[in-house]
Length: 606
Ligand code: F6R
Image 1 (cartoon, rainbow, N blue to C red):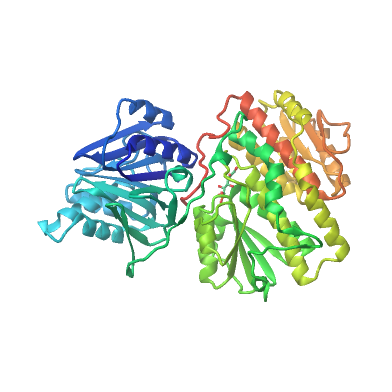
Image 2: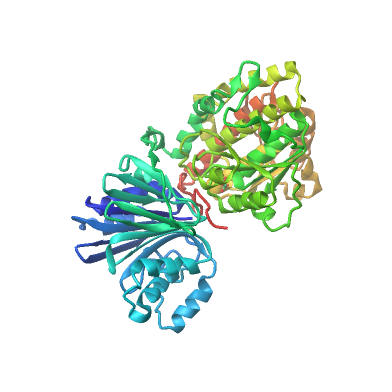
C-alpha cells in the first residue's frame, strides 16, 4: 500500500522521482522520501505528510550526471507515519524502498539485532537493508558480491513485496524484486525506470516490462538482468501507453467530481463492441469458459463488493444461475468449499487488492475457472485470471471510487445477459428490453446542472446528526451500501446501508429527528414495499431525504429522478445522486475529497 519509483541514468533524478511519486500519491500519502547515489555521493531526503513537504525540503537540491535513485510514498502499515518510518530505509551504506508486508520481519529483526544491527524505524522494511548488508559482509569473501547478497536476502523474505535497493557497494546498479506487490520497469535508450504503476513513467519511458511474481534482478549500464527461481530469464518489452491526459482534472475541482461527470461517457467505452444488435458479446472471452459451469462465486472488497452484490440479483434473475458473493478478506480464511462447476469471478478497480488477489489464487489452486473484471490491464489480478474483462473506466484518481463502480456494474449486467444467452434463459423480447436499457444508461448517468446545484444546496442540512441510514430493496440495497460507503469515506460521518425491510429488526431503534435517512425509492422495483418501510421510519420522526421519481409527501427533502420502467436506469441515476450528496457534504466540511484521511487507492496489503 505504497508507491515506489526508481531511476538509473544521466538525467536529473530528483524531479523524475518527485514527479513519479506525485502520480503514485493515491497509493499512500502519509510520508515520502528519496535516496540518490551519484559521483560517490549518497543523498537522502524524507518528509512526513503530503509530497509537497518533500518538494519543499529538496528545493535547493538537484542531481547531476549519472546516478541511481529510488523514491517512495508511504501508507503506514508497521509504525506510525514519522520521518524515521518513512522510506527509503538506510543501512550503513545502502537504501531500500518497499511496498507490501514482510511477514517474517520480527524473526529477522531479532536475528539481526542479536548480531548488532541498529534499527532506526519500526517498519518491516528496514530488515531488508540490514539483512542485505549482513549478507554482503559475511566472510569478506570476494565472491560475495552485492548481487549475491541481494539474492540471499530475498530468499529469506516471506510475504508480499516489491522492493528496490541501491548501495554504495555497487553505485551503478538498482536491485529489484517483486512478489505479490506490483512493479514494472520502463525503458528509453539507456535509461531505466521502476514504478508501482505505469502513470509515473508515461512520457518518460517508451517501453515497459511488467514484472511477474518471483522475479528479481538488477539494472546496470542501461541493461536489465532478470531472474526467477529457474535462473536468468528472457523478457519481452511492450510499448508503453502515452496518454496521461485522462488523469488530469479537466477543470473540475476534484478528481472525484470529474470522475462522476465522466461516468456517462466512459459507459460508452464500457459497452463498445459488447452491446451489439440483438446480443451481448465479449470478444475477449472464450465461450467455453462457461461450459460445465452451474454456479458463480464473486469475490471482491469495498465498492467492488457492492457491484458484485448488485450483480447477484441479475445473475439469478436473468441467467438463472446460483450466484454467491463473498468479501475477499472473509473468504480467504473461511475454508470455503469450492466446487469445480463454479466460475470464480473477482472484481477489482486496481487489480492489485491483496485480499482479492489471494482469494483468486485460492480458487485457482482448487481448480476453479477464473474470470476477473478489472479496470487496470496487466494488473496482478488480470494476469492471474484465466480470463479478464476490462471495465474501461480510464484511470480513476479519486480515492472514493465512482466511475469504477458504475462500469463494474455495467460489465456485470452485460455478463449476466451473456450467460443468459449461453444458457438460453432469456427470451428475445426480454433481451431486447435489456439491450435498449443499456443503450440508455449513458443518458441516465448525465449530471444535470440543476441536480448538482440542488445537491449543493441540500448538503448544508446534512452536516451533523448522529448518523445516516441509506436504505433500499433488491438491487437498491447494494446501492444503499455503496451510497453509505461513499459518504463515510469522504465526509467522515457515520453512515450505514440497510435493506429497508430490515430496519424494523433492530436499527429502527435509532430513529429520531437526528437520524438522516436517505431512501432509494425506485418506481420500477417494489415501490410499495419500500414506501411502507419508509413510512414506518417517518412515524419515528427521522429526517428523510427521499430519492424517487414519485413525489413523497412525508419527505423532508426530495430529489426527483426520472421514471424508467427498467430498474437499472433508475439505479444509475440514483447512484449519481448519492455520489453528489457525498461530494458536496465533504466539500462543505472542508475535507480532502480526493485523498480522504486513512485511505489509499490501492490496498496491496492484507
Ligand atoms: C471505496 C473504494 C474501496 C475499493 C476497495 C477495493 O471507494 O474505492 O472500497 O473498492 O478497496 O479496491 P479494488 O476495486 O481496487 O479491488
